Image (cartoon, rainbow, N blue to C red; front, side, top):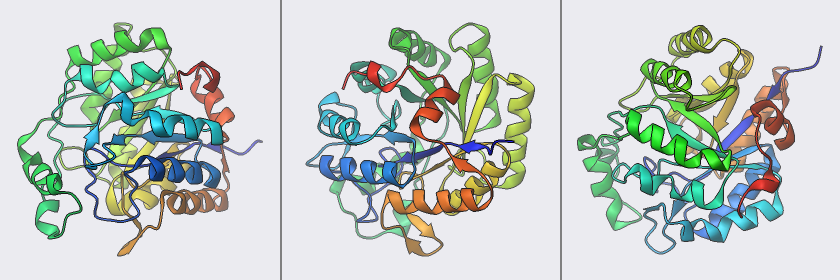
Length: 309
């Protein structure tokens, strides 16, 4: 029997919820490109990308802030590029899907419901901030709702449908799975869907094994064989829950967007370091890591030759 192929996604640079509290977190065009290429070399078959303003470090959905690194990544790697449709708690869905539409990426993320997406406790943990805008942005997140209404989701799905983009459906709680099922029932998304169980974000489901099992059982009930899945655990549970997911037949996501650490109390040196660690664990536990082309086959992607960068 062939070994299971585990897809590793690496989330290179945070925009919504990752203050620049580590010098390892890339935010310039050059650093994003370099770390993305290194993560692909370490074993990531999918690269999840946000952009930042190259002068202020602020989250950006301006396609001009994606152009300088997308072409370099495509030229140097065969990795699947997954462009975020998150980007900011305060922007409209029209703004947030513009990069994915502009570049006709193979994949893009899509949050499957509105939520109290908050990271304001970080404002009390840090005194020194790299950028002036960060402290207020973080501190005020307790008053924001990350909006992804059914109308927003439908607009994103219909606008991006001509591009044949596969969505990474980010489900932060069990209700988001039911939202996705509804959207499939009305024809917005076709099987096989790719679900990212997002765990450990304040406002969403907690990052523990019981909750992971519950999310998986619910997805099995709703989607049967019509889905593929992965786990994103924020913070300290990133590596432990990724390892658990790989043994449950799932795929994994790591990266500095989700955790700045390689282990408790020790900052990661790079995205590639996190990829290398989870790859070692997955392989030691008896699974093979999927190549980009194997990921494309499993997820039914259109192929890297059909993007616009």
